[in-house]
Image (cartoon, rainbow, N blue to C red):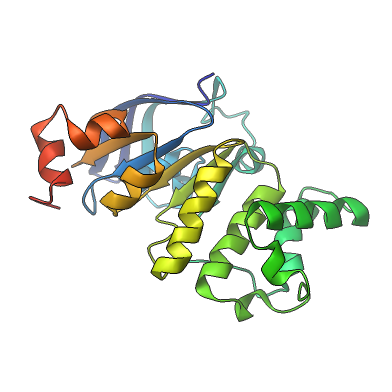
Length: 250
């Protein structure tokens, strides 16, 4: 099964050619890391996978992006449904100014679920999956913004999980967190790949090598190299990849 396939993807913001001829196939139940220096296109490409770039002025795309065999930029595609299937966790935790419970229940209610029992079950299950339940189960009515940064990020992951996606995109999910919270997020990602396909953008080479099965190296809008993480970090095929991984630039 190939849950994500991109074929000859080019992205432009106005006259700026941001992604050039990107071809990639991402396997299910795996963690794929996108690495590369700032401004190389990795976050832009991540956001093409759930159409988050649609909101950016001057955005244009050529090429095809398939999720589970369906081209996601076709006119008949309902973007809300796509984003339910392809969840997103951002760099900075972004809980809503609501209670912990309401944050997780939010997506369910938007999708028309109003059965209290079903919502309660889903909230508990998602918080358990996000390794947060034991810390918040007695204060679900407290404001989400009263949680620590690391807890807020796990809450955002729980909120994503509640609507039952099959793919989770993560844009530097631990870059704003302390080392202990980062370790918890990494542990969580490793557990979640048993049920989900995860794509993560990271600036942290050690993080990419620890948690990902495959790594894609982007440079100046091009996908320079893509392969098994273990091979790429020990024996990269491209000189540019080697220079970046060993810290010679970037």
